[in-house]
Image (cartoon, rainbow, N blue to C red; front, side):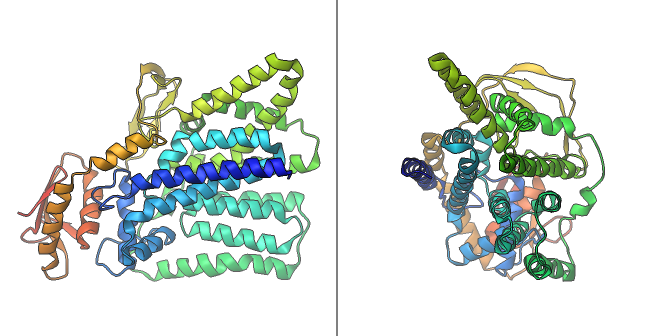
Length: 481
């Protein structure tokens, strides 16, 4: 790497880190459960699992232990409100690591453009504001992927890859869609390693994942049962095709398709090997999330995103090589392509969890009919149902002014009221809190029992399953009975 390239990359990394630090200032709230605005329904459950590890008698669904153990450690230190700041640091690591990988294969120009697409990406930046484990799992998966690709015949790097992938499983089980591709690639393109080294490569999953599996199996309540969501099907193809285009933005998605076509004509051995690995990883992701796992969720595209970006980088590298021959007009066309891809990635949606919309401009979008199973909450899309709609969407997660306004808008009087209520609850004997609960939303109890259970550090039970109520929750508002 030249000195100019090193300085350019250093400036880019510093800018990304400084932005994350500036944004973090507006992500520290007086209470994570009650005041923090970026909490998905599962966020409260993740926090509950962390408090359970800390010893509090709250709901415990035995989610993967990585994030809950982080939550327990931060809460024990009185720093739980700073969890979103830690997530920002993980996001910075994810973006920088991806840039380093792309720059080594496609050069600084293509890597810079793709890094900007990633940095402004609404889906990624919005997801990183939420209390979820996916950013951490993706970081460890990408680190394992990087170690594997650089391993060649270096046995220690295979072991490092195994450690990172095993750590990712302790945050989310998404590596189950990565390992098959690595095994196939190793069998096709790598020399065999010694049996002793292979055994050492298997040590991390046996130690980390094996210990977690043993602990989970010994518990009377095993929590969320993922096996029940596995069944061969083809009903998710359009869902993930649409949402991958939505996550990337339409211009970048078109460049992805062009890059995949260009990959078929690559002659350089190392480049072909690199693209083959990414194609296998993308295919393995599809095999699991699209054709086997029955729950549809845009979050899962995070685990595909970094295996698609090399094809976009290839499209930029080769298109620049071709267009630059046309002089200034050709360079102008290339700059327009890059600007369109960056702008398309930036377009804000209503939420990073939006499932049925493809943005065309900031105010125009294509929307498809969606159906939610009332029994499970799973969402499916009807492919032949597009309609052009006017759509303002949400705000950009890069908008520090909006984040600052949200932070200033916290109802401190309500927080103080609940603090006083909590003092009274703490004087009650340790055990269940009985709740008189009313809400028209059948899924709201899943949120409220964890949200307020976390806050009061007790397990909540609804009447008539318990005796006289200790609390009353009506349409999300809490009061003593």
